[in-house]
Each structure stands twice: as structure tokens, then as C-alpha cells.
Image (cartoon, rainbow, N blue to C red):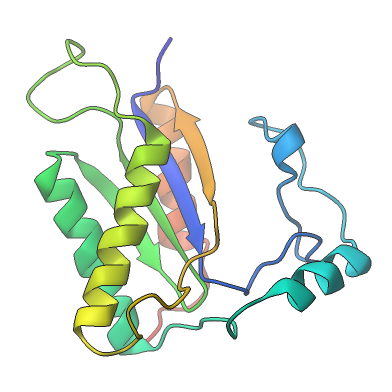
Length: 170
């Protein structure tokens, strides 16, 4: 069974390091339903010492541009955007795995490709607006991709994105 949608989370650079006490994904054990890895202050310190730029936190203007970038990518690839939430340190996106109008006749788009497109389009818009210098590190290296297989999976992820992010930001 292939995914019908993806729940993608991308973090800004330096704001959620491996070992973070809020929980983190150990890429060797990144399976749906597995718990987050335990906090590891030594690992956080190791990764913080390796940072080349300061952590990135988005203000309202940056969040607006990241929202626009997500719409742009979904429009360009003809993907249904179920919902999204762009926060100060991360963005959650729930989107279809296949372009609209093709049913199941087309293979799902690689979610890592989509994650890369979302990050690169956002980076370009942020740089074009002068909010960040070209070449600045804006996003963490990877991100999280959850494969969603049923309409119920999509609704659960969408509800978390819509209702589980805390108060609306200005």
C-alpha cells in the first residue's frame, strides 16, 4: 500500500538539535509509531558546537513568505495541500502524495524530494525579500516525513497541525 499523503515537518536551522529535551528523531530508528529518542544534553552540546550560523527564528514576515512558498510548490506540482502551519521554528505541512487529476495512475512523488522543494523555495523567497543572505543556513538538514495511508490518517495529522500548535501567531 502506498501513501496517499505526507505529513512533513521541517525545522529551522539550529533550533531543534539532536538530543533536544523536547524529544528528537533518531534516524536509525525512524519508524511510524516509534517514540522519540530520549534527551541527551551531551549530544546537544556536540551539535551546538558544530553550528556554523546562529539559530534561525522566523518573524511574521518570514512566516508569510514560507506560507507562500508552500502554496507555490503545491500549485506547481498540482498537489492538494490539506493544511499547514508555519511557526517560529518549524513548519508542518500535510499534502497529497500524488498530483491531482491523476488518481492512482501516477506513482507518489518522493517525499524527500518534496521536502527539499519546500525548503529550497522558501529559502529563495526569504533571500529575495532580503530577510536572509543568499547561502545562509535557514533549515535543518533533514526533517520528518510521515506517510499517511488513509483519509483517517490525513485527518489526524491535519487536526494536529491545525489545533495542536498552540495559539495563533501574529
